[in-house]
Figure: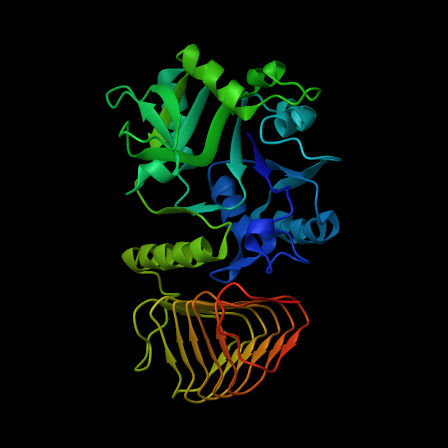
Length: 363
């Protein structure tokens, strides 16, 4: 069986974390986002994964070699010379998806979604309904913000799609995870590129498209605020599973993950909802909550970090304070006693003065 993961695009919504890295290899609870998907696919018997990519190919290709060995899957790349949307990249990758695929099925996954992937349950739905496609959907509190999927709750057959409806038509949205029969690839075109909306609506008209409702958490982690919310949901799920990776200790509050190679002073207070990455250094008296500290970063003594992201190899000085969704890109230096409120700091920058205006970009 095969799978196709959409990793193309410039990752603009997640900048400045994606200035030099594709979003699919950004650390999420100490594993690249893409790895969660590859791991889950390998568990349901997928032997070949096709990555649809266009931007930052080189850094992604090097990483895929590690994943191939770790999960015993073949990973091939389908390179887009120009953006093709969502449906047309499947056509571009057709030769990979149909060759040596006796089941005639493939998964399609957006690379920036995180959930407890239920690929095995999707296969059961497809087999039971003998349908052309299955879409994962997830329930949300405010469906008016999204594209809603209306379906028959008895049969799970999709009836219609509604983009940001003003009246209630349902509370389930498209989760960006699909299972298709490979024969559908004959319907797609590269020139002009087939619209994903048209492709999916045709399946609905034919009554050949069904849902699987995800029972656990789901989040599109393609923007910083949702990245941190997804981290929170993921660690809550880890708690539910009694995951031993969650940290314990006198100064640990709520759900916290600390990489085994990180150094954390006993007087530092972490949590709730904090991730400390590989070889990080957290010094005495630091206070971190609702935040992610990526591999190699240092947080100096008595610094306070709240609802923020500090990425690879960056340093936050003593007594500094970061809050209100401040995002620090890689290899940055934040001076002691600086206060950053909702700032976005681009890679390789030094910040020596406080910033109080949210949304300020340090270039």
